[in-house]
Image 1 (cartoon, one colour):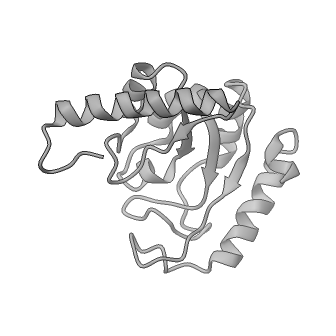
Image 2 (cartoon, helix red, strand yellow):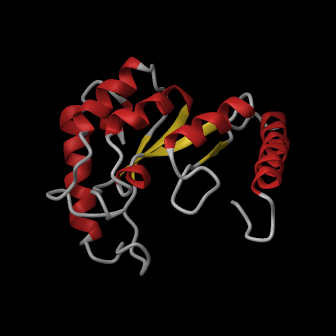
Image 3 (cartoon, rainbow, N blue to C red):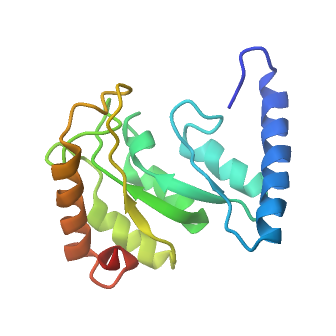
Length: 165
């Protein structure tokens, strides 16, 4: 993340250096290393996230559209990140809400699943609902929303790994 006391260019360089070191450590143990571009991180939007994975060769993303949807960005602006995803989070979100009900969700997960297949995504799709007093995440019934999202992903992604989890 960008620290208030640090120059943004230095924060970026430090992040890239540290991530490259961690990536090398993970490779030694045959582990996939990923980071999540999210609200409050040094890469809170798709373009900086794309710049980061290109700046640290081999780095992958834990991709979660909700952090971008919350800012009002359309799914199409997140899609260029799909080839760099090694893990994927799914939950409901809409403009102004990092987490919302399935009914209020504006992410087109049918489109996302097709885009994941087109990008030859090999990772898992994890349903991620959290119950914390941050970003209004404690305002939905996590259990019910998890079941609805799981059922949707299974129905729409019958040929994907999402249907097996």
